Amino acid sequence: MKRTEACCLVLAMIVPMIIPQKSEGQEAKAPQAEKAKALQSESKLLEKTDATAKPAENENAEREQRLAKYLSGAKFVGNFTIEGKSDTLPKPEAYTISKCEKLPQPDMYRLTARIKYGDIDSEIPLDLKILWAGKTPVITMDSFWIPGMGTFGARVLIHSGRYAGTWQHDAVGGHLFGVIKKD
Image (cartoon, rainbow, N blue to C red; front, top):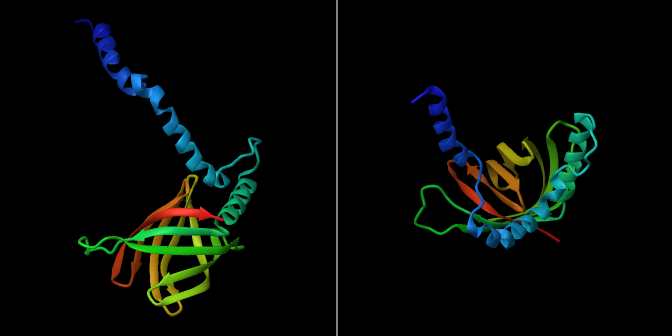
């Protein structure tokens, strides 16, 4: 077999794997695609809607304001797990953010949140760092002390009206996940 024939044979095998082929059932998946679009519409506030080119500094400021607006009045409703206790079901959790505002320091936001944790149910202002993984905001806590509750660590990402992440409270930790509801 000549070298060019071998190359053509390899390309003929690889190209179908790289370029998606339309299957018979694709037309039936259209409602699912519409449903996925609807789920993402809630988080559209986090995406850039202005197509005009602006300096990165202005884009970041706009993105930060969209995030603050999106989180103000948001309720995180879901569940959390405890590592090492796989025989128990995830426990319910709910956090309501009454207000979110961007602070002057880079990546810092003040989230005024109502936290229900054990016997505690109170509204607390939390100055937290929110970093960006591309277009995805990630709430971060490193050895963060919350009065009356203790010291916590967390990484919670926000995507398409949902949240997921990890948490740590002293020697105990686990996962958390749920949906973000807006009034």
